Length: 114
Image 1: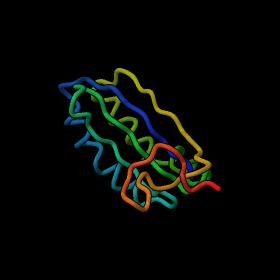
Image 2: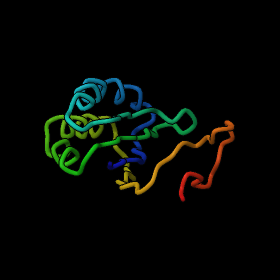
Image 3: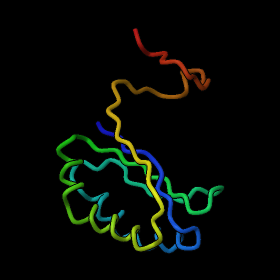
Image 4: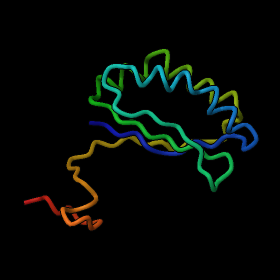
């Protein structure tokens, strides 16, 4: 699995329009092979900030997205709305587990490891 996470900064006055214009691209991307999650959402406390969160089944699936029409359309849509910067990274998680243990307690440690 590959996780994409980060922020994109746009003109605060254009953020709502950017996200609305991006909805068709988000919907199309979610239908792509290997897309588990694809969400661009507004930060309620920082004007102009958009959070990006994606999960892909494989590197090949992510590659197909990054070289395909939906990625290019989303990139161009955001650019037309006063793009000011981006800080988006990709991750390959080696372990994942629930935040809450069997008692319902949130845990920061990786408690299911042997």
